[in-house]
Length: 444
Image (cartoon, rainbow, N blue to C red; front, side, top):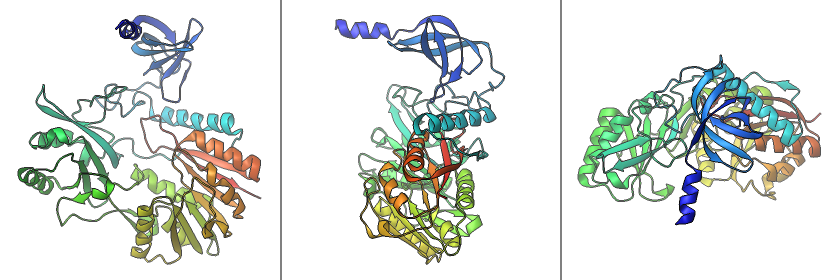
């Protein structure tokens, strides 16, 4: 018991203290120095003089929460959402949009220099899009609070496991973000309201889908309520009682979901739990930029790794001789092949392979002119020898984590003779510290 009390005392905030903010950390907290120690202060911006409460003291650094801004940064703006600061979904709404881009560019370049020991010859202009209502994929938490006899639907509180009390979400597609209270009201009426912890959201071009994670079967009345809501709100529900293989549509007439890449006359069909890029506008610009940088020609053999359901593959196939797409998830490989068939793309083939180990598969023994990779946060280190040995002269690397991009770019440059020609950020997640980027590596 003594240890527990001691630990609790260390977490009691103390202060207030004053500090000058020098920079932003990778997680968007302000960086200050107090009594020779670094302090990370939530919601503080570079150049500001602030007052903060210290809520955690460590041997090498402290952590604090902003109390007041004594001298604000000219880049400080009014957050666009009333729930900013409570909800953990956004961390940068108080920073002007152009300054957010500058921050993300700095993160990318700093990682490239420090981790990879490389620097791009050219810094590409950032890809930007809508700042609000952009998010078409999300996982929402659901919680029935018995003491208040109400259901909460939304994201979790910042730094806490509790579901935030939200009326709306300004970054979600309005078809979802403006309906959080309506959704909560529906779930409150269900007999399984305490056994429904999560909603997976997917907004397609033709429909809004929501996958309800149900820990026990809905009653007949529940099903009637869900069906009536679906028809009145034009939201298509799916039920997930177990793993992903258990996901089934509530209604037999549920439409097939798709999004369109207009510049390539291509429709990409997907299931509501499939991976698709969160930001539709940035995805469109990203595909255009990737093809522009890769510059595929009618005679080119193109390799794509981590191809997913064909987001890059089918546009690439429209402009090259042949595309070989590789993906670790067999369900996505099947989806990519089906999308090729639906779009009358006959010069693309897809295979399932473990891309986190050196592959001896037949596709890895072939020669290619160009390649595109879009790996997860872990990067693509294990498959770099295959890429380097394939004969490619141009590689577009689409990254969702600047540290692994930097590591892999450094390996390609220092071990395999590539040159980092170009790199730039893509604002896939405005108002967050998440950095997405694209790099072009060439081998002369």
